[in-house]
Every structure is written in structure tokens, then in C-alpha cells.
Amino acid sequence: MSVNVSVIRITRASKASISLGVALCLVAITLPFWGESSWMREFVEIACYFIFAMMWNLLAGFGGMVSVGQQAFFGLGAYALLVMGNFLGINPFLSIPIAGVLAALISLPVSKIAFRLQGGYFSIGTWVIAEVFRLSIANLSAVGGGSGTSLTALRGMDRTFRENTTYWVALACVIMTIVLIYFFLRSKQGLALLAIRDSEVAAESQGIAVQRMKLAVYVVAAFGCGIAGALYLVTNLRISPDAAFGVNWTAFAIFIVMIGGIGRIEGPLFGAIIFWGLNKFLSDYGTWYLLGLGVLAIVMMLFFREGAWGFFTRKTGLEVLSIQRRLQR
Amino acid sequence: MIDTIIQGLLLGGLYCQFALGLSLMFGVMRLTNIGHGDLIIFGSFMAIAIAPLLGMNILMVALVLLPLAYVVGYLVQRTMLNQTLGKDPLPSLVVTFGFSIVIQNTLLQIFSADPLSLDAGGINVASIQLSQDVAVGVLPLIIFAVAAASTFGMQLLFNKTSLGRAFRAVSDDREVAELMGLNSSHIYAIATGIAFVLIALAGLFQGMRTTVSAADGPMLLLFAFESVIIGGMGSFWGTFVGAMVLGLSQQLGFKFDSSWGIWFGHIVFLAVLIVRPNGLFPKTKGC
Image: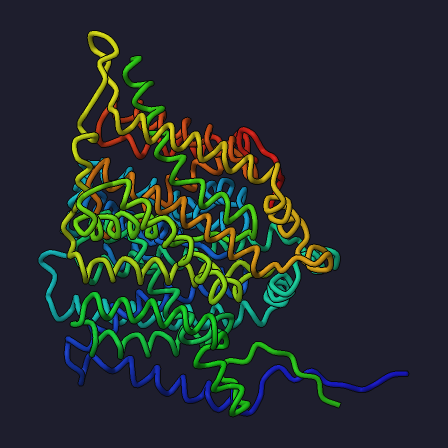
């Protein structure tokens, strides 16, 4: 019995939305010529959160590794950029990718330790590792110790030029993050990752190198978090161990991913937009605002696991960035 | 040197009290409570809040606080955490992480960011002079004794009572245990209730021994976690020894340089993880 089926990898809706996305990107590129500089600053800040959340989603939503310690690589990226800029005289914009690569390199030995723990203990173990980096750097007076220091490498650069370049670099990072994760998850490796997420044992029995795959995801996530950290320093111009290695980064990432929908590419994108809105209008409420975010994360997890985007997809059947393979006769 | 060792062991006693609740919840239902440290701090603040109503009598505070903690723990498990259990650790991690954020900000809102402490009526400063230059505090000694007793009690509960048998049964195989007539939701809730009593006790001690502030929780979680892992999962005496190792490491680190104490504790933890991934005294392997 043979059945003729064809595999549909891209739906009409996702074709349309990709075109829309490209158009949006083109508009976004021209923003410095017509927008205000405060918009650009806001974008860069939310870009850091978004990239970080995207990486957390990759780890927890696709790789099954719920890390509470990704801020380790965020901080390392930021401090790598600081050292390259202030001591080695490398242009900070050029050293953003180098900072990402350094974070990824450090994640290799770190994974040797972190992977000794599984499940919930992996989460707290990664947190301990992030704390080790925080405390180590807080004791290094060369990079400002516990109170932190400023990025001096951008001093003397024309302000408009600096802001525009930062914005474009951030935009490029965001677009590359989305595109790379999209194609990665659509690739053979992506399929393997989804198989591991659904059942590690079954995936292994089908010949998937589970441990190697997990390591690859961990290293890629470290790279992305390093980029986010480097970007944060370029826009913020000041860094301290508490800000760079704070668990708040992970807290916000969890919130963004949970509200948007875990295990989907659109989840963090949608979540970041919601987070931006909440942050803009409610962050003045301080502790009440954070308390609300915590409650919302609990409620989403207990009752709306699919997240806002999952709800939208289920109701409309639309998938913007589809990674599914649909069979059609 | 002897002084450092004694202080380290006494610190370990406190860490053991921190760790027992975490060890219990993980042991019975594989639940990692990220809000563990924040719950300890919450316990401290509750003690500080009710102490004036009870005439600053610490024993009375404990008599009110501990039963209350049991009820709260039972209800939290029954109404929320039971729904998050399963093969996937994500739900319980996200929910307990949410607890952590909610507790921290609630405490910040009510008590502000200022550190507070519980007036223990003098026992917190009383000490016994052992020799010319070695003195031990009365309160740390009491904490150490209670921690040892708690460890002993938990081990006894697990090995000798029918409740302990039920704990072990649902831990080994939930479905088979249910077929044998155990109500696992109820058993889990009892375990969390007991864990919350241990947590409240830890909070009481922490509040008496030093000052507490709303943001302290995560650090205590890490100390509790490190004690459990160093000792090896699944054994309360393992946790006790793990806490001693951590307390000693930190105290040695502090002696070397006050800013490296906690760092050195973390490093010893990571070293144990590299050399003996299952801890020093593993009972169960993997998780």
C-alpha cells in the first residue's frame, strides 16, 4: 500500500506573515531617519530582553533544560565587551559578536559541570554557577569590583551616530536571532530537538545523539545570551556585577516566554511586545508591578500553558513562523 | 583554627535546617522548590511580625508559627503544586519561581527593604567560653542541636513509621502506590506541610541569629541546595554532612578573606559535583 503524500513545510499564512515581517523590518531600518531617539533606546533595551528570552525558550521550551542561570552568559558577554573596549581598544560594535563567541566558549567547560544535574537541580545548579561568576567579577578591582564601571571606549563618538549604530546593531541581532532559530528548528537538527523534547528515550533509540544535541543547544543559548549582554552594555554604557549577573534577567525571560507561549518561536516575540507594554505603563508601580508579573507567570503556567500566542493559533489556525511538517495527499 | 572549625560546624547546623525541607520535598515528589529560600525569609518576617503580639516569647512564637506553616504547606501543595507534578520539571519550576518573586515583593511592600531581626531576649548574644580564645554562642549551639534532632527525626519518620513508608512508596512509584490505596495528593500535601514546618523553624532561627531582608531568599536557597547535593540525594544524614561541609568551607573562606567566603563555598560545591556527581553519601541515583 503506498500513499502519495507531499510534505507541506510552509503555509500560505506563514508566507504572508513572512512578507509582512520583511516589510516591517524595512520600515524599522529607516526608523533613525524619522523616529525619536527615545524610541531607539527603548527598542534596544527590549531587544536585550527579547534575545535573552528567545534563548531561554530555546533551552527550556525546545531543549528541556530549564536554566535559571543564563544570566551567567549575559554578564560574561557584557564584561567581555567591557574588557575588549576599555583595555584592548577594540570597537565595541565590532566586539559584540566576539563577546557572544567568548560566552559560548566558556559555556563548554561550564556545561561539563551543569550537565551533571538534571531537572530541577540543573536549574539551581546553573544559578550557583552564575553566582560564582558574579562573585568572582565583584572581587576583580580591574573591572570596577562590586560597584561596576563604565564603558569608556565609546567616549568622544558623536551621539547621534552612536545611538543610530546601536539601534541598527540591535535590530540586526534581533532579526538574526529570529531567522537563525527559525531555520535551525526547521532543519534536521531542529527535528531531532523536537523529538528529544517529546521523549528523550525514544529519540535516543532512533539514533539521535541526545547529549550532543543538548550541548549544542546550550552553547548556542550561551552565545545568544552573550550577545544580549554585550548589547546591553553598549546601550547602557555602565555595568555592575549585580545588574549583569542578576537573576532578574531570567525572571523576565520566564515571564516573557510564559505569557507569549513556551515552545514556539512566536511566543517570546509576542511576549516581549506585551512585556514592553506592561513595563511602559505599569513599571512605576514598582513592587506591585513585579508582584503582578509573578502572579501572572504562575497563573499562565497553571491554567494557560499554551500562552497568548498558543491561544491565538488554536483559535485561528494561523501559524506565523511554522516549523511544522504537514502531510497532504 | 579550632575556632574556625567550630564556627563552621555551627554554621553548618543552620544550613542543615535550611536544607531539610528542600531535601524532603525533592525526595518525596521530585519537586524542586525555587521559592524555598524566600519561604525561609517569609518565616522570619512572620516571626518578627507576631512576636510583639506574644510578648516576645520565642517559644510561643514557635508554637503559633509551626502549626500554621504546616497548614499553609498542606494547602499550597494540595491546591497548586500537585497540578505541576509530572515528568516535566518545567511547571513546578516556573510556579515556584513565581512564588519566589511574589514573596520577595510582598515582603518588600510590607516591611520595606530594611533589614530586620527578631529579638531573641539575649540568647543570641550569650556565649560559652570553652578556652582562652574559643567561645561558642548559645543560639548557634541550640540551632545545631535542633538541626541534628530534626535530621534524626526525619530519618526516623522515613524509616520507621507508616507515614514514612507511604512517603517512600509514592516516591518510588506513584501509580503503584495509588493502586495499593494510597492517596498520593494527600501524601504529597503532608510532605509539603512537614517541609514548611522545617522551613518555618529555619526562618525563626535565621531571624534570631542575624538580620533578614526581603531579598535574602535566593542566597539561602543556594546554600540549602548545595548542602543537599554535597551530601547526596535521598539521605537526611547526607544532607546534614553536606551542610557541615558547606559551613566549614565558607568559614574557612571567610577566614582567608571576608569577601571570598561564600564564593569558596560555591567552589567546594562545584568541586564535589565534578569529583562525586552523586554527592558524598548517595542513597538514590539520578533523579
